Image (cartoon, rainbow, N blue to C red; front, side):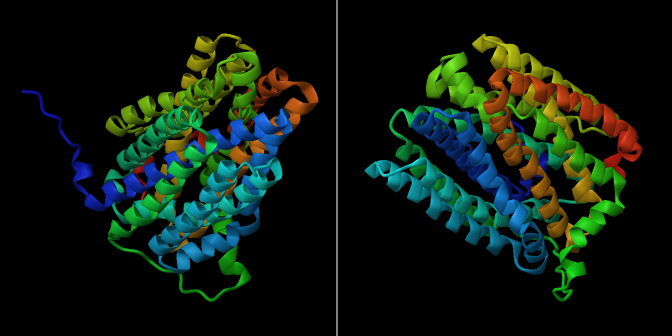
Length: 408
């Protein structure tokens, strides 16, 4: 009789609750992204507003990153996440209410997204920092891949659910997303911490900027974070998916949800493989190859007018992207002391936010100036150029290997 074998690491109860919390908040965010993108483009019919959504998501990270990192190292990380998710749900429910009564406007969407993104900025670094406190370093590379695969699972079903529910109205999507945010605030309270070193330094310029100083002292970490920053900044095509779904492929909000899910499908397959067969040697070289492939598949997506080809290219794009995500996550978490991890993860979150949200603004602006297809095409080419240049600038990253054995 067939029986499903549970991986030994999933016998860790706290890890299960932490992964469930990450899935819940990721699904909520993906549903929110689908609803906001389709709704604001429907109201304005201007791609620049898709870029502005990315900009208002990025600004809180830019404004509060250093404060967030210090708070995450100084105070209880679980309580920070819990409070942040409650505040985030309030903003999401506000979007649901305004959509329900018909008072929603592009300005109100942007203001509310700024409010939600501010709360999200405070929960992201402590959420990332908890993972090394619930598992041992020996199994961390395997857990990092598992964490990436669970996140990608959320990235698959989140947009799909958002696209389906949008047919019932954006207020339905927002309401479900708000409930999921509240669910996260409860799940995180069941996570038990093995050990957690608090930063007891007084509030000084040096302590607040400690994350930046630490990253600068580690060329491999700096190279990995900045590579992701610039590659995704130039290669981000997802901000313009509403335009592709509406005007180029003509597939509607459900099709938009499928396109949004496509990168996560590729990432899920790859990260699930990496959870069973972790990267153990030449991780740096593999990361650069993956970024180059990311650029190539972005170029294919840019010029495609076929839904099938567009979908497949996004799947392969996501598969290549998750390799760099796993390498970067392993580097940061295993080479960073626990009492520095909040500040380092805060800086990493700002870089990720820059590449994703500011990249969306860049895509929207470039599309307004040169057209949608040229904007995505130039982005893919830019990602390849960045990868080649970074091989020369960061040889420590290029030759990084056996990361799972590192304990410093």
